[in-house]
Image 1: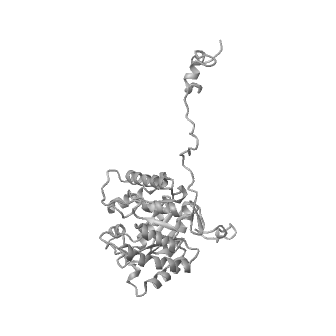
Image 2: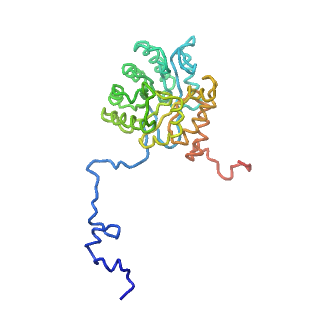
Length: 340
């Protein structure tokens, strides 16, 4: 008699119990599923890339910065360009300044989204937005331009004037007019989370679920998968406490599998924490930019482009190992002999 374990001596040499007990080495009796024909794996994968205007954005390579052009008289942040003597010139000058400072996109909006804002008619919003987009497109032909609107007529006219991306602040609403327009024009769209009231039972799961439904609705409308971006809607339909909780758990949005845009710039939650007005919230914005990048955000939408570009480059170097360009990466021989 050999020293074969009693358990193994009790098992047939082949078939029988081994077939029925995969934990003992069998497998033939264990059912398995294969993917249906044409089905995607459903497993996590890279975000790929998206063509926006004349540029292709490789998601995950670095964080991109979207500069804000508010063509309004009543922006919460005090930067509404309609208050200037020549709004069109002011917008063109600001666009050029943002481009020089490193903006990757420009986001043009003609209606304030702050609480209590005055509603704007389609005609007025068209008169505000379309000339600016046309002027910026002529001056900066390579710059991707986004139109921030909830009105399909405004979005369509903006696209005709040169806009490359639709930014829908009600991307989770049942009305799919903007997603259908994006599908027809074969353009990317940002689907932002929003609610009329800040009512939640489980904040983050509900944000994720609402955005997932919006993604599925956009796909049904014909928007290509690679043309869908998401925004968790910091400051929209959320209390200050909700907004801070959202920032703490931004990484959970990765489950959606789409690039994430975040707009915290100068918002009231930052002012509430620090008890500061909108024009003194730069440092708070920079802190949220760095934290967002550490959580995997792909685009930050900001007023102060130069400062946020610099913060993003440092955060990218730490989080992603991404230098502004491989040619800028110092060799060992080039590095100064200093601590840090």
